[in-house]
Length: 343
Ligand SMILES: NC(=O)c1ccc[n+]([C@@H]2O[C@H](COP(=O)([O-])OP(=O)(O)OC[C@H]3O[C@@H](n4cnc5c(N)ncnc54)[C@H](O)[C@@H]3O)[C@@H](O)[C@H]2O)c1
Image (cartoon, rainbow, N blue to C red; front, side):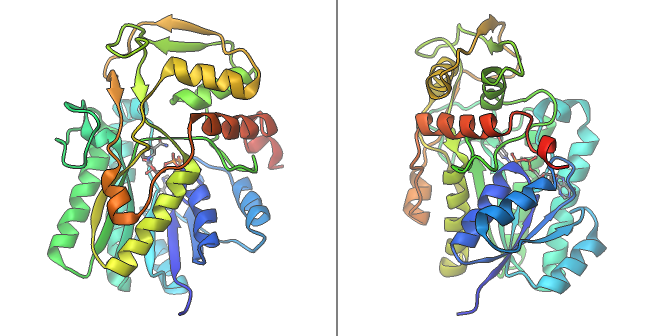
């Protein structure tokens, strides 16, 4: 059988770069596409080194339909994994048009390019944010959907657009993957999460405290109804998440059906558990101060990952200690992220 070709949008981003390696390992031909709005070209050098092969990359914006059509014509992908999006919740509240324009404009343009090129298999990066404030835990895929900010709306609307496409033409097969909280890094320490400016998420913040870039962590609220009072989330190792994409693509090609699944571990960890595990992994103290709750934060959020296990045969393998150890290796080897070494 000839090798299938997969186009990754947002390919040099955090989750896509790990997925790129997992897809190469699984035997796919991978074409990466990104505009570097939130990533560094240095990632391409790292991917070359890790995969020991040339990486095929197109610099383009997913909102630029003519550019997308050129890419589709040159590479004839069999499927698209659509990661490209802006992802900062706070920024989405301040700049809603940027988020709707980029995330929805990009999704529509990618679908249009796929339609015009006869490519109708897509894996879509959705998020647990589509569950809004969960009413029951663990969260199943049938839970009520609600968005509490413009970023979440773009994921919810993105899902709707894709559902409508599937309903309009049964040649479309879409795997909607609702990620919980991706953390960690590739075991080599060569690629990992490299937030620009102040990290929005807990683990990259803790990593920067451990490496001395920030003085202390702020823990937002210690009076939630959780075992230690701090917020509980479902952290998932980015390498497990990457494998989930490989499993979802296999499902699209083999079962030839669409699906929506949670990708999480099913285990909730509190902020203080993460702090302790990171201190252990790094051998560094993680000073923290307790701050007031942030508006909009929920006490606890974790997945029921049963459907992914049943349909995809996928489950997360790596626990919190490994997530922290791999994050720390990446942070220690790249204290200033990718840019410091890209010259
Ligand atoms: N990291 C998380 O916590 C998380 C959780 C749930 C869902 N997601 C979703 O997963 C996807 C990947 O997230 P990530 O954490 O890897 O983010 P990331 O910012 O590291 O990666 C996104 C990539 O998309 C690129 N991009 C953005 N707009 C583009 C455009 N118009 N054209 C071309 N490229 C563009 C950026 O340059 C970046 O490389 C996103 O869709 C995000 O919303 C992320």
